[in-house]
Structure formats: structure tokens, C-alpha cells
Amino acid sequence: MPPADAPTPPPLRFQPMAPPDAERLEAARKLFAGPCDFVKGVVAMDGLPAADRPEVCFAGRSNVGKSSLLNALTGRKGLARTSNTPGRTQEINYFALGGLEGGMGYLVDVPGYGFAEAPVAKVQAWQALLRAYLSGRVTLARAFVLIDSRHGVKPADEETMALLDRAAVTFQAVLTKADKLKPKDRDRAVEGLGRTLNAHPAAYPEVIVTSSESGEGIPDLRAVIHGLMAP
Ligand code: GTP
Ligand code: MG
Image (cartoon, rainbow, N blue to C red; front, side, top):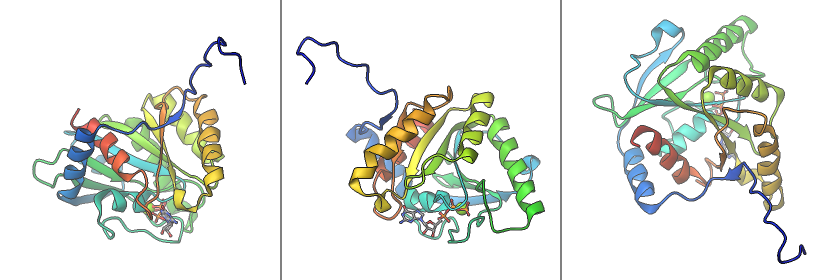
């Protein structure tokens, strides 16, 4: 035990997200319970929709659970295609939150990075598109960088974080598949992630622990997105 008059240690810079207030949670729940329509799949930068509203994207290694998270957020299982095969999502898929007419913003599902079960030339093309998108999309309000809570940060994640640093795009780390984590490994996963994030100036100081299976963290993530689209 430290003596009673010992100075309080500085708080960890990276913390699990603090619970959002009830009003924000309810507004976010309503937003995500409303329409969310597929707009288009984009294969080149000149195919992006007009940059007329804020958007957030879900980036991460192949198979980390990007598409599943989008489905969990919107409560629609088949909205984004998911699969056991890494490399399922091969285009930048736009979804209009609030519907095609007068929607508040876009949710963007992007191809994964790292290993993918697809032809090399194809993978290289979509990786180049992903880099161009992450560093050049003016209306990208935040990139969520998904990290598998069992595996932690890999070199390909670090590369993406460095790219977002250079482009000055704020990114927020989201741990996925928390349902597969033993309780004792949970703090370790957040701490390990925090150590990595310390080296990245573009990292948002709260991490979100999620499971698309159990629904953990989903209302919180909805609240964050609502805050970005309706501040
Ligand atoms: P790519 O499009 O290939 O880059 O993959 P992705 O990141 O979109 O992953 P996807 O959502 O397709 O999920 C990959 C696999 O992980 C699927 O078999 C999902 O069922 C599984 N999965 C995703 N999220 C969770 C989760 O929260 N818990 C568990 N247990 N499994 C999950
Ligand atoms: Mg996917």
C-alpha cells in the first residue's frame, strides 16, 4: 500500500470508454434502429459518393470482424456480408445511416488488410484503394481500427495507425470478439493496446471493447458515432 499522502499516479492515457450519458445512448439507439441503406460498393477513389456528410469507417485486419460489427450496430444480420474466409469484403461499401434520403452520415465497411484468401493482384489493388481512402477522404470523421482482442496489435495494424497519423485522421481502437476473451485476459488486452496507442498521435484516448455476438460495447459505439454525426 502506498502511504496515504502519496501523490496520485497520473491516469492511464488510454482507458476503456466511459459510459455515455442516457440521453446520448437513447438518441443513438433510435438512430441505429431507423433505416440504414446500402448505397454502393466503391472500387476506385473517383467512385466515392459526394463528400457531403460525415462518415466513419471500420478498418482492420481481414477477419477481425468489421462487417459483423456493422451488422451488430444496425441490428441487421445480413446488411454487410461476413465470412470465415479472410478477404470477404473487397470493396469500400457505403451505408447511409438514417436512409438514402436525408441520412445523417455514412457507415463505411472497408476491405481488410493483412492476409486474404484472394489473388495477389486483386489484394494489392484493394489495399492501395484502402490506403488512398484512409488518407484522402475529407469527410472521414473517424476511423475505427478494429483489433482482435485475442491476438492484439499486429505489424499491419501499426502500419495503418502510422498512415492515419501521417494523414491526421483521428482513429479509435475497438477490440473485437470480446466474448472469446477470458475475464482475466481482458485488462491485459486493453493495457497492451494502450501501450501501442501511446506511440500514435492520431489515436483517440478511449478504446471500446466489443462483441458482435454478445452485444457488449455496441450501444457505446453507437453513441460515439451518433456524437460524430450529430454533435
Ligand atoms: P474481411 O471482410 O474478410 O476483411 O473480414 P471482416 O473483418 O469483415 O470479418 P467478418 O465480420 O466477416 O467476421 C469474420 C469471422 O469472425 C466470422 O466468422 C464472424 O462470425 C466472426 N466474428 C465476428 N465478430 C465476432 C464476435 O464478436 N465474436 C465472435 N465469437 N465471432 C465473431
Ligand atoms: Mg468484411
